[in-house]
Length: 211
Image 1 (tube, rainbow, N blue to C red):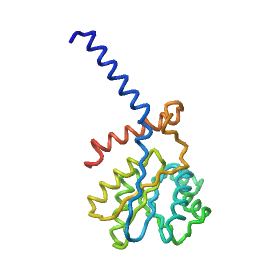
Image 2 (cartoon, rainbow, N blue to C red):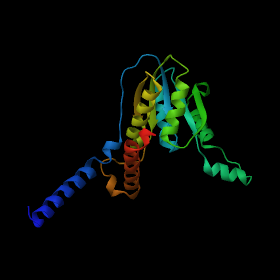
Image 3 (spheres, rainbow, N blue to C red):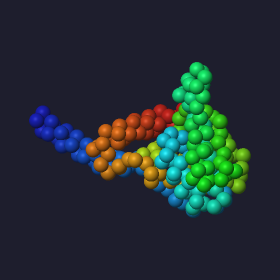
Image 4 (spheres, rainbow, N blue to C red):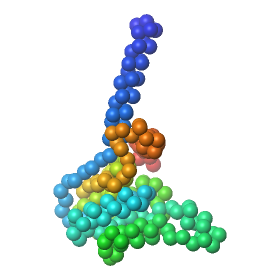
């Protein structure tokens, strides 16, 4: 094959790969799973963007009578800094708790673990350790921002397997997330989200899951 033909072949391949990524790069990040399960349900909400995850948590809570809500208190650098100069503000965990109460989630159904969680893997670790204490739990519904849902599922699936947990994992990506998976490349914020999430996903697949 001549250099010119090789260049043309590589160019065509590159264009095809780029086109496929533009079409499916955003959609692939979103993952929803609704498998039947037996036992108590726990809604595990991952910390991060508060509005979309709180709204989705409240929606799932209404659909699952008797379910509890579980989350891990995240690392909170802004609060730690302001507290150190005597400017107290509510923690992210407290703000999320108050949001759930205002969305009609019963206080007795909300449980948060102190952690702190630095990453999705940390959250999965603390939550799996907590769930091992209750053998009646048959389902975990992971709630997160839509673009974070596939990676979250992979992390929790791996952690539960390592912990020996026989619990059905379902995923409810927030329908309130301000993210357009079809035309993500037309908005700077969405493009940044896709680039960041793909880097995190690749890192997890090749490095993170083995740590």
